[in-house]
Image (cartoon, rainbow, N blue to C red; front, side):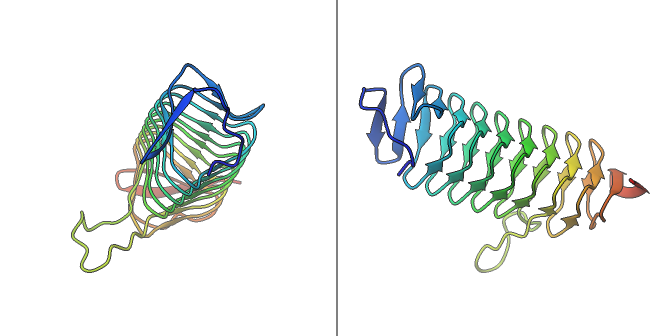
Length: 202
């Protein structure tokens, strides 16, 4: 269930897929605000000060922290955790099992692959893809994603692609349009296709 009081007025409906907010705008509490045509499934918890924009879909057992913003048409799948004061832009797909830290900014049109870990104070520009696996759907046996791990204070430029299994360490910077195929060390600057280590930040 949602962790806040659902208003008694008929601003929402309930179907087999969860709660749908139908009308213009709804306050779930004094400080939790959702725009119209939002779908929120069972088991979701939403922190105070959060704003969910129109046409977002939030699946079951999602934990959203305080002062979070979820953009228009964003899909957040099941068992996702989003920290406090984090922004997730429009048309973002956050796959199942993802963990996103505090004070992180994920801009629009991103794909965050299954079970990804995104740290605190991270910036991810638009149209970035963090892939869940590299077999293009042909893994043998049970599906086990292994996306890139994004550490604290990492910045990733627009349009970059992160291949599975790599680690991007703290305070690294990835230039726009990069294809990152190897581990990126702490404070390192990488860019290019394929991305290469260009220098180290102080």
